[in-house]
Length: 231
Image (cartoon, rainbow, N blue to C red; front, side):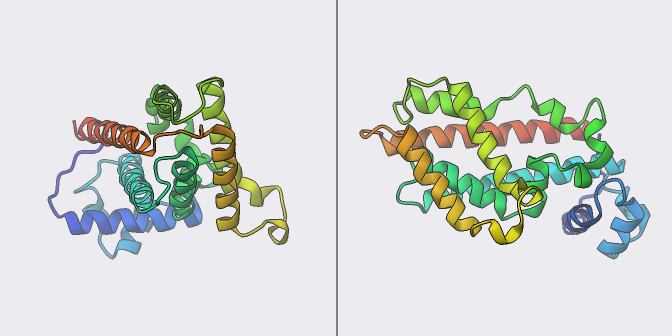
């Protein structure tokens, strides 16, 4: 796990920016610490002033990008007049996900990008598997009457995962010219989600309150992960 040995925050962010660009382009396995140092314009030794290993660097990048994704998602929802409905929350999840090539690769566990890292027994993703955030979110929305209650929350959460995975993976099975514009797909998914799952009297404010809880819990989880990495 990584130990932040240097307080040079600007350099650390430059290292993470370089790692993100290279890993998305070449993949985790083909990207070396030397490559990252060269891209960041620093020496290889400077990398180790911040991170103990390539794995530790990658895990710090994951946490940073997940935090950025969460903040982007929340900002989009707060600006959306229908922000408290499941359709709005879900479509803005997809907009936030689609805005980051790195996060799209992480979401679908792209083997080209993630490489051998995902096969490590103690990798970041396996540590997070015990936290079924999507299911918890759906169940809370159901309990508040924001989502219909006559469907199993786990089934709804799984369908939502399938739709998101399909959005970032469809170009692997369908020719690009046959795929509608991404924004149109996302808006269509939101319309279908609301039509299928949102009760007529749904309380949007209750939905926003639940979102605040989910975001706070996610931030705490990532903070704890950061602290664990620094031990």
